[in-house]
Image 1 (cartoon, each protein chain N blue to C red):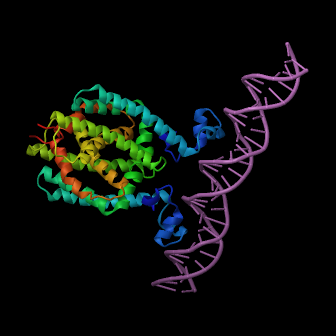
Image 2 (tube, each protein chain N blue to C red; image 1 turned 30 degrees about the horizontal axis):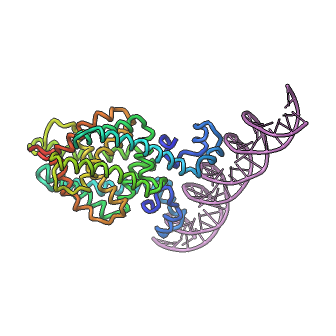
Image 3 (tube, chains in turn brown, yellow, green, red; image 1 turned 60 degrees about the vertical axis):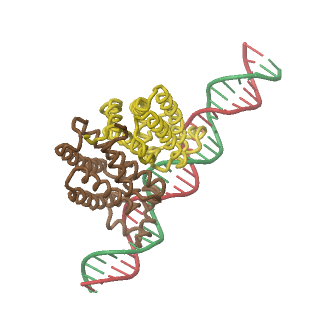
Length: 177
Length: 177
DNA sequence: TGATAATGAATGAACGTTCATTCAGTGAAT
DNA sequence: ATTCACTGAATGAACGTTCATTCATTATCA
C-alpha cells in the first residue's frame, strides 16, 4: 500500500484490509502507522544487506566485488518493486523513518564501497589520489539514478543488465584516451 | 516552510503567517496547497534552467561545457538551500507535483547532457559506443547524490568545489590504466 | 473457564478550504 | 471640500472531511 499510494496517502484501513485483519489489530503489533514503515524498512535492510555482503565476499578482486555488489543491488530491487519504491521515495527521503537510521544505512553501503576501493588500490586496479568520499557518492549516485528511472518508468526494462555497463563506466569513465 | 517541515507537514496557516497574510488570502492566488508547490517548482525550474543553458553555451568544448553545467548546478542549489531541499525531497519524488511535468524537467536535463556527449564524441574527447541512456544517468546520478549528501548533512561544506573532481571522475573513471 | 487475541464502530484532532464580512482606497456627486 | 457609493482585496472564524487511534465487546483457544 505504501508503495502504491505513498505512505501518507495510504490508510490504516487499506493496510488492514490488505493484511486480512481489522484496523485495531494493526495496533496490537505496531506502535503507530510510521512504525509499520520503520519495521518494514529495517527488516528489508537487514535481509538485503546480508545478501550484498555475501555477493561482495564471493569475489576475489575489486572489480568483481564491485560488479557483484551492483548486480545484487539491482537484482534485489528488481525482484521486489514495492520495496524499491518504498526505499527510493518514502524511506530514504521523507521523514517517516528515523533520520539517524537512514544515515546509518547509507554509511553501511558507503563502507562496503570504501573497502572495495581500498582493495582495488592495493591491487593496483583502482587509481589512488582521488577524493574518496566523492568516489563513493559517484558510485552510489549512478546506481540510485538507474533504479529511480526504473521505478518511474514503471519497472518495464531489465535492471540487472545495466550492472556490467555501469561498472565499465565507473572504471573507464567517458573520456577517450 | 515546505523545505523545513516537508510539504505535507507544513500547514497553510504556517505558510500564510510566513507570508504575512491571512489563511484565506492564499486562496486568492493559489488553487490549493499543491498549487503553491507547483508554482514554486515551475518558477524555479525556468529560472535555473536558463542559467544552466547559459553556462553550457559559454564554453566551447564538451569537457568545459560539462564542467560549467555541473558547476552551475551545484552553485544554484548551494545558493538556495530551501530550493534544493524542495527539489530533492518533495517535488521530484512525492506526488505533489504533476508527474508528467517532473519527467519533462528530467528530460530537459538529460537532453543537455546528450548534446554535450554528442559534441564530445564529434571532438574525439568522449568515447563512442557507450549506452547513451546509461551515460546520462551516470552523470546526473552522481550530481544528485552529491547534492543529497549536502542537503542531509545540513549544507555545511562547499558544494561547488566538488564540480571539478566530479568531472574528472566522469572522464577518467576510477580505473588505473 | 480463564486467558489471550481480534474486532470494528466510535472518537476526536488536524487541517484544507470556504465565504460572509470588513475596510482602505477611489472617484463621482453635491 | 465634503459626502457617499462602490470596489475588490484581505480576513479569519467556521465547516466538513479525513483518518489515526482507542477500547468495549466478541471470538478463539488451551
